[in-house]
Length: 442
Image 1 (cartoon, helix red, strand yellow):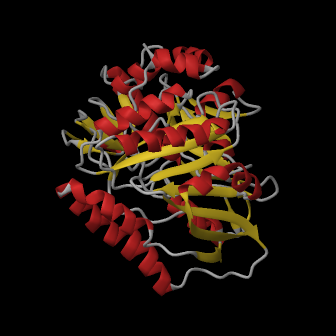
Image 2 (cartoon, helix red, strand yellow):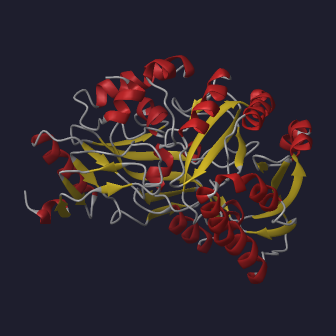
Image 3 (cartoon, one colour):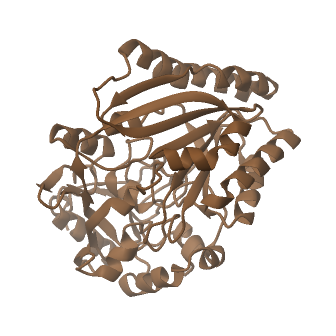
């Protein structure tokens, strides 16, 4: 089959994820320019006896997209297919970066209801791994999906929604690449609105003491705790009637670029070279960002630039278990000789109805631990994971964890429903890899 039929093709180059902790060497890469070319590439991979995986921008820290077979790159499958204002939806090609989607929607006077804190990922990569922000009532990006297209192992193009192939729709909104390759997604959208963000420092003990109240009173509440300190930075986002009052260019440069990225890069480099300096640096870092309030359109409030590279583990625990879990994490760090230069991020999500969503069937709180790229992270993450799993934690599918199918069968009431659907759609594991074998079984 010629490259004209299957998009541009190249062979033999190593692929690395954003953090650099996952490397794979596919036999060939294919960049299809249409759904037809993607389908042809899937069929050819099956004929050649090769596994096939699609990869977005590589922002996952797991090997969810790694393959030694055929790697599909969807960067030519981008753009908005159509907007349905009457039904409040937008249909977008799977390779579209969230940043381009958010900007295009804003130009049309529309917005997603909620989103994560970065927007570099493709829409299919973000939704397939369960990317989320924080919200009292509004859930992950995947929970905002109203329909999707999926190329299956047989080369069939399935259209899925609550009414069409509903059993596939129930699972494929967070499919971890196990059910097929997503080619298009239909999201629920709403008229563009304004959010007022209130960012301020707050003591760790006060945040935990007032957590239920802070969660209940704000549409979107999150906070960052700085290990080796008793300090947090909090952020409350709530809808606003306006007027717009965006962050000034000077303040934005100082807070978001100089302190949160440039200076943060420097201090992490120092901490990696001289770990003993980290507690002192943490105390300074926790006081560097000042209180501020601003009002802007959603994606400019929800998302922030993240230029300092790191490795991350994140677990969802029942929301009611958040305070105890975080206190145990702090106690573990305080007792240990670990030196942690990255803040711990805490967010929430309401229960949803997606089979393998980390918030499936329960109100959830997320605790994310990070280590600067190139710094040994295993001891910290192992100790944190023991605490998270003791509280019935569910790891983010795209972030570092050591759990396996046996664990997930007990953690997810609908796990068997998902694996049975996988058996039906991909019995020969065309879309399989070592990561999926570990987390889903074989």
